[in-house]
Image (cartoon, rainbow, N blue to C red; front, side, top):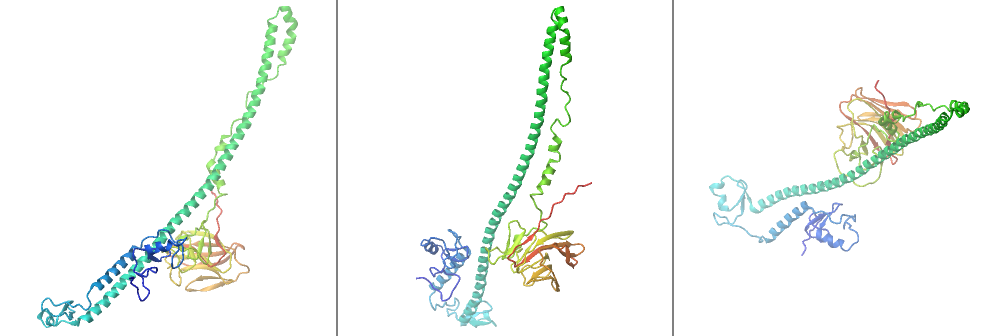
Length: 469
């Protein structure tokens, strides 16, 4: 017969209503007996959780912590059932019933023991009261242990989620890396083909010119050879014949065509310097057209649970619901915020943010030591938009309102850490909006805070090249 409980507990299966036997945990964190779940799933098409109906893995892992706890509970219940009702042991010294409990020696005693020298001035309690008091204390300790196991189960589930999230991050990041290298490889391949084609065209053009020169020279050689042959024939003739033909032969020799200039003009050879000179630099310089540089890269590991950070790590927007994210110390659990991946504790830094307003957003910097999961944040300096109103905020100082003629679209944030200034500019009108003056004493991180359903974006910077003189 199954053992039922009078109230909901954590040790019984919701299918068989008995203490868990070989429990398994689903991805939704619900637990069931392995055999009960197997029988339930054998009658369905999809592997759904019997409680919340979420799809789960075909072979869910065993919950060893819960199994050990249930085995302990089953063993305790079994021992209680085997113990004879109302059994009372006898004192080994006096063969009297053990009706008292010595609080000093922490052992059951009989009434004779109570009056013996061994228990002079000791404190005693009826055996039933002592048992009840110590049972109560043991139950409290057991409750603490049970709570600890519950906590361990939750931590284990969160770590399972974290492991799965790490795998998903690895796959997505690897895909992005390969895609970016494919683009670079495609660019380099096209550049290689274009430059080799230019070399081949120059080769074809200059070899064609040489062929024309060689052909012309060949014809001249042939003409000169004919003149030499005919002249030699005149020279070998008899004197009378020679004298008759001498004048004509002499004129033919004198009228021979001029020989092609044997000196090549400039630019006859391949312009190797043009093709190889600063080749890698020229390719890199042209590559700037297909690559971009962002001074701030968003860190998705810090993003609040309702923020969606795009794969390029430059755009973010607020979503009502998305897949659960693992708990990690970098993440803002209570605030819709995402940090830049790199903090600043020296130098001057500038980044541009494109904003499209529909609800509220804020951009600025926050101290590294600021607590991410407290109700009220401090240690930040920001420009904020909320309900059509712009203001600057830095608790505990009072907010200051900014009066704008038009909505901001592009904002430049400039931080000078040493001078202790944080300035905001409207790039649309090229005007200064506000400057915080603050002596920074630790690293600060750029951030975006938003409940906008329209994305906010970190704009790329134009890459410039400067030569050392």
